[in-house]
Length: 227
Image (cartoon, rainbow, N blue to C red; front, side, top):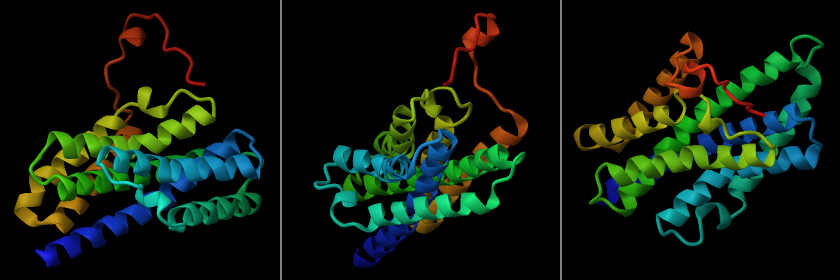
């Protein structure tokens, strides 16, 4: 019905804005940590913020992707990057500067991962309502990690999704939670439930050092370089 579509669209928009700002922030912090100039920081911010959404829309058959239909997402990412650059000048310190960047990166990256998981799942549910689990969960995952992969490749880093413990799996869990809750509670509660599940799992993984199985580390052959 029209009311349900409106609620779904509004929920999607809320998480799209949240994810855009969060990932733009994480992209800008990576640029700062890499010592890039303002253009490099802005580029990483924009690519991280809209990259996953563009991949999502292309895979969902949405042309042109929403990020390319207007300047909103790109402008929001650029404003966020500018705020990060200005703020870093005032809050950095000789000892805590690196820790501050790392903390800000983790918070923003986790929020972006959770928010874009939701938008990917909602897009799949809205575009292809007959597919209950595989398509929504995978589209949520691709949306959540796509921008981060592009960010890390441009920053000459191993993509965080390939080595960060309980990262992609948090997105998968969030997608499953949304798919399970949606028929029972509606899209709003299901979306916040999935968002919360991703946040909770990532925060617990960071605080308690939860790790997936690493064959190379287990057998003492080294963990490889992440840079």
